[in-house]
Image (tube, rainbow, N blue to C red; front, side, top):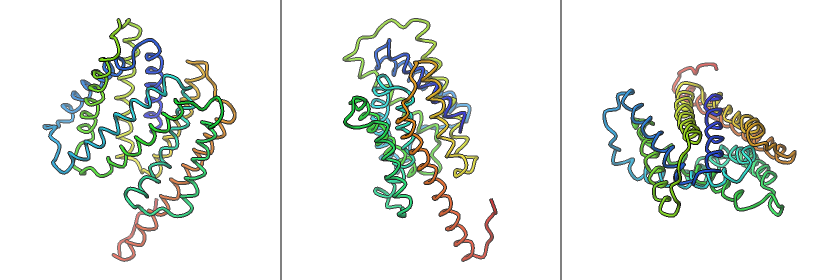
Length: 294
């Protein structure tokens, strides 16, 4: 998980650098084609014989794809204008937002402790974006909107059939994002891609694929309650790369807000893990089976 977060953040750094000299749509198309080809090769290596989506999952895939498109465009627009660490700090509120979204949309039970943690965590986000100050602008709003789109994407993903390969979902998503980039070229001119810019796009694609592979492996093999908190390591990489590559170091109030978001997110993970173990223990006692002591 830590490696996945590092590669995703390096991908963000590449894309931030590229979009400063290349039209956003063109960058999306080039990276998208590279990523799509790599995913198709991966599907072949994994011996996935068909990319047909089961009928019950097609509607879910449609909603997930729309959410992914919204998340991609809002994130990249914000990424081009915002310091990398600030954007990453806002995105760390995602676990809190997903918990809240699950409570509202899926009616999953969320107690007062986690609801309090969510409220405090979003207070930390407000410290990062600071409404009413010069640092608060449309790009900060887009970053928050991106989080909302990702929540829809993640909640939809949770409802897919278990037999549907993750690579298949990723292929359709990559195709849709690439098509969105092609549509954007109708209002943006195609410019000459220098070898340096092409190398950065290739690096972004490679990091994206590597991050995807590592995160899937982590979530499928590792204990989610142990693995998931390592998502917050992305903030460390974002601060480091933002400082080294873009000469941006977050202000003290931004670091405070990020610390609040991370702390409340970790509390939420721990609390959910405790509740899951309690439920498992209750079911085990009712069926007379023992639960592993982890």
